[in-house]
Length: 164
Image 1 (cartoon, rainbow, N blue to C red):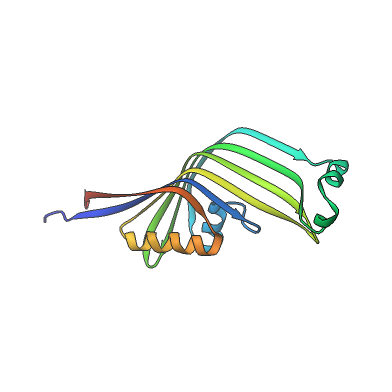
Image 2 (tube, one colour):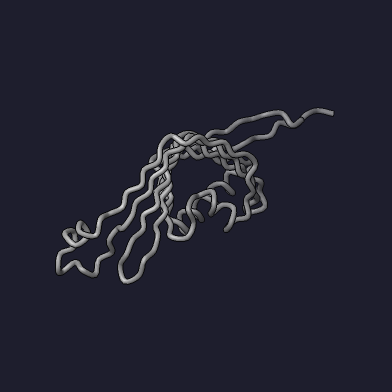
């Protein structure tokens, strides 16, 4: 019986920014909204910074006409070196998502008419792998519509490998 070659499609996104008020990270959104599961997670903390904005500074920052504008009360920033792998099905195709390299996670606690948190995650590289380039493209479009993810560059790579 001869082996049939199959093609894997890879999409590399560099300098990805994910920002949301409910989900802390792209990983959380993949798991909770799209049903992906965590396969592997290795991370090492590089740094953590927590900054509280003192009350007297908040008053100086806000001008009379801007008194209704939201003000950041607290900022938390964590830098990690990460390798995370998630797997799921989108449009009936298996997709693996790899989060690679440096990740920066930020939490900004903002007060306006009410207090809320904005989560921002910046990723050095996110790699999507599937047999279906169409499924990857549609997942990226869905993530962009649902969460407004941004990225500096994208690169498509196609690999032929033997079925085994």
